[in-house]
Amino acid sequence: MCLEEDLEGLYSSSSTASAYFTFPSSFFFTLDTLLRSTESHLLFDPSSSWFMSSKEKPTLGGTRIKTRKRNIAAPLDPAAFSDAVVQIYLDNAGDLELVAKSIESTDLNFSRYGDIFFEVVFIGRRTQPGTVKPDEGERHPYSVIDCEPKREAILPSVVYIQKILRRRPSLIKNLENVTRRFLQSLELFEENERKKLAIFTALAFSQKLSGLPPETVFQPLLKDNLVAKGIVLTFVTDFFKEYLVENSLEDLISILRRGKMEDNLLDFLPPVRRTAESFAEHFTKEGLTDLVEYHSKKMFEVKLKEIKTVLTSKVTEESSVDEVIETVKQLVKDAKLPEIEVVRVVWDGLMDAVQWSGKNQQQNANSVLRQVKAWAPLLNTVCSSGKLELELMYKVQMQCYEDAKLMKVFPEVVRSLYDLDVLAEDTILHWFRKGTNTKGRQTFVKSLEPFVNWLEEAEEEE
Image (cartoon, rainbow, N blue to C red; front, side, top):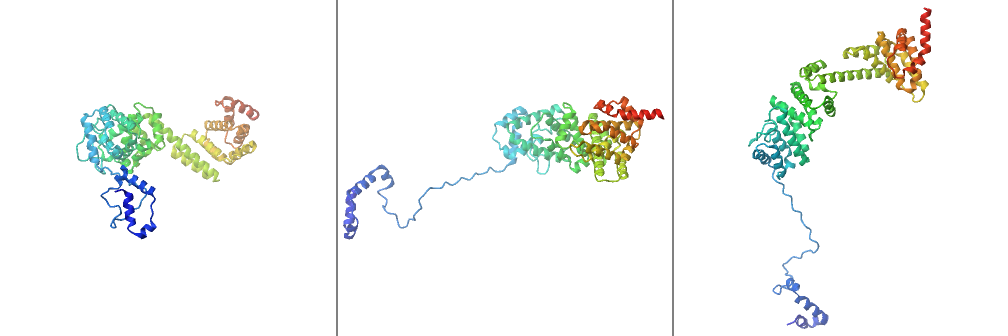
């Protein structure tokens, strides 16, 4: 029986229904064709009911939202990771070239266990929490700590780490973390082990190993307990000696500068020995005389800068001349500076306190002359001999030569210093006839000639 006959029979059974529902023939043809198709038979099973059961709940139509699958994290198992890396060392009998290749091909989670990896490199096994001792489990005997304390034994480990970092640059931060932690815990290592770490660190800088910026090495060392026990001094001594085998002192100073230690080398010494004399004694005994000379020069410059800063500050604050003289005397005594350096730094300090007026040459000249007049007693104190007076003349010469605005004021300054009894006649004549500083000399000699002629005439009259 066709669908059209079924529907007509259904609605013809009721007069009311037939009055309201009339189906055109085209409707039955279209519906019948649809239901006879293959897809329609799949959608409408003849055995199933045409109408929804009253027990079934309606569902909302629309776009289905896909739910995200949860990323199931791998269990945190640092011991298993450590065991795997140790096994790689053992399988390759400590051949670091083969170990590096094996590590490159492995799928171990280095991003999570990078610190543990470097613990295995340095110690031979991951360390117990809060210590530098290997944890339980098998340990390989090819670590940095197990090497002999010699550069030829430790250098392969440095090269090996460099290869690892080139292939896995994300581990650079882990190397920095582990190195900092070990250096902060030097007291937990044996003396021989500390020496190996010092040699490794020196070779790392010599080979420009990535992941070890100087501040990572030097700053963690400055723990009070490590410094007080002398552990830090021993460590840096081994470091300096090893690094200078193939590098210059300038290279070492560059590292110290980047590590913010160039001006603070005394901080490596225990507080009870923190003097320039102890520094010189210790490193001279260790054969590092170049470092001693550098440090002496650096300390000298620091002291000069300190005196100059204090002097300029007091002059600017308009302290009394007597107060400034006493301050300078005390600073010079404490610093043990040569007298000739005192003359130089006093003149520089006075000039730094001058309020310069830009392009106005006359005002600048007047400012210099006022400063000379006001502080003549101080200059007279530090210029206690003809040699020191001559040095002051050279300083005046350089001041006027380096500042074009002061070129013409040179003879006036010399004349003023003479009138104030700071410079003697013999000193001026010696400079005029035999002065050795050539910078601007011809110009200054010519400008000073009238005054010199006057001095010579006065000398003849006497």
